[in-house]
Image (cartoon, rainbow, N blue to C red):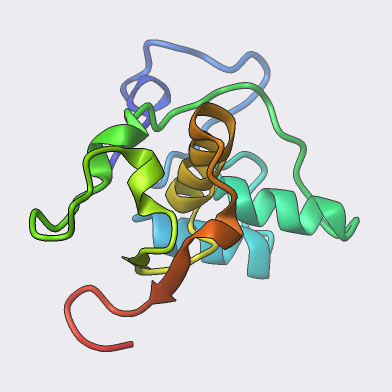
Length: 134
């Protein structure tokens, strides 16, 4: 998955730097960035960045570049037999997701709270594997 093509194709130059562009999958990129501090510049998991920054152990400084611009409302799927007509109907419901701390899910909990008044504790969250139990 290549989310940032401009440095790779050369349309943007970094003055005084020779750029080595590594097109890695997000999981490998985030793991290497936080475990081994392999990169001078990298896309990071927003949630991992927040957690390490709050512990004063983050070797990176964030810049306001949001390279994954997904409309998060479009990635919530509901069962049609559960009488869910809007976000408020999720209160008290069981919601499954692959990882509670995944950045997309952090954004969704923030959207639920800010736009719909749904607190994270209003929902029963369950995590597990997408292709197999986990």
